[in-house]
Length: 101
Image (cartoon, rainbow, N blue to C red):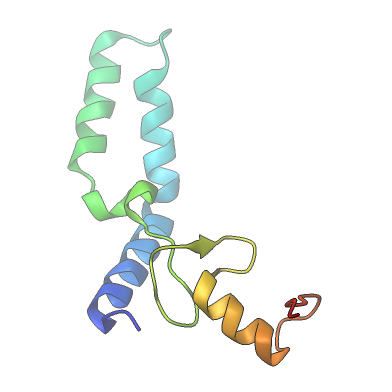
């Protein structure tokens, strides 16, 4: 089980990224538009830099929904390999068969 603080920090980042997504996207579009004036593009990039760092989607870490583990994450099931194996062995994941011989 991951530390509660790490899980909460990641949840806070996800919430903040969702909140600032539209503003960040608009400023990025202005900053990368070559047809606009250089001054406008520079002002947009400065405003983009003034937004909170945690509002960027690249700072969000994929974590297991069950344990909070950040590594060996299966995106399709949103769980780590360990949680998939445990729940699969118990038969709690529909369509998953764990082989044994």
